Length: 121
Length: 112
Image (cartoon, chains in turn blue, orange):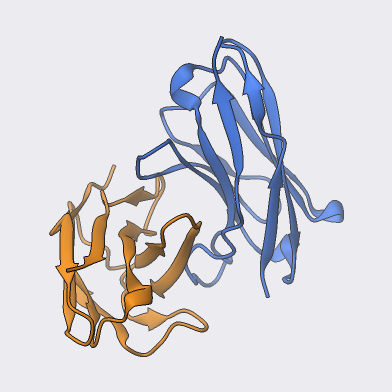
């Protein structure tokens, strides 16, 4: 089944950077778009970004546009999120999920345990 | 951006009884292919979210048949035919029609 394992979170000072990673298995990674979703403590779910299966198309939420970059390495079945200029409000659990197939949609699948990012001085 | 709303935001339920959650979108979620791009997710206490329903009415793999999704246009409903204790948690609807993907605020379901 779809398995996604996030890593790379941690404690970072305001203005700092982090690179999150997501290791995928259980499906043909290169066939699917992938998304990052986050959840601030005690809050709801917020979609951040997605990337097409080839990596040629990306999109971002306004809240992170210009500060984060999504990328993927299909040879390594891996997804990444480079986060710069971090703010206290970026403190959250970050999830990677399998998004749509170019010709079909099956919902957001494969929610792992997430990786926690804490931005604090 | 498409705004998603849910009601109620809190839903005390009795095991064995039915339950229903409503979700509305600020614009139609119908695509030209005839599908409504509306999903339902459940986040159980202390766990990550999980997909329950996609494209309005399709149960995800392993989801019990007591869960059903319906609706069209901008109005959608998640129904639980007979609530079980394990169904407690926060239910979110989400539109998958376009980016940014947007979620409803969540409906907290707990046992009376």
